[in-house]
Figure 1 (cartoon, rainbow, N blue to C red):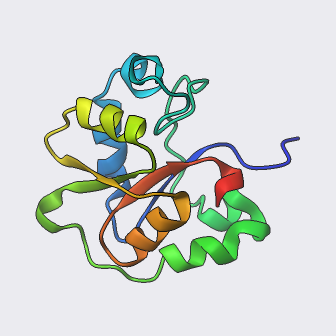
Figure 2: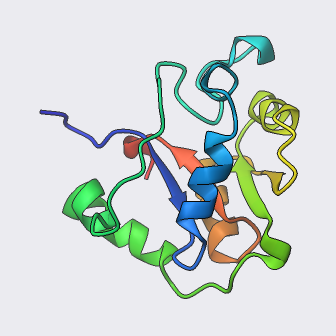
Amino acid sequence: LLKEPRHAVISRKDADSEEIYKVLKLIPDSDLFSSAAFGGKDLMFSDAATELIELPKITDSFLYLREDYHEAMHALKAGNPPAPDGKIEWCTISHAEQQKCDSLQIPRMECRRASSVDECIQKIMRKEADAIAVDGGQV
């Protein structure tokens, strides 16, 4: 058994998770899960990842991340309004991750830079970003 959860894409509670999933699935896996072209490792997603899996609607953060992580995740679920104009504001935490995000050129996705996972979570809570990909141990 794993000691910590697998990687997860975290979004605002009112963000359209199905739409975020659809947008990410438009990107070839080779572009989404590879960081070599940007001189980094595990940028936006783990380089070891091979696919995105949409969890069933009944799987909430408590079930997925376990009780230890529930309190941190609860803050992200605090009724934020929908993203303006249907755009997804993706939060990145390094220059290389920002470059990778920008290079994906998804029309409805904009990349927002922060200095850490904690700052990205703060941006999500302040409605300045919609989502970030994190390792379970980072939450």
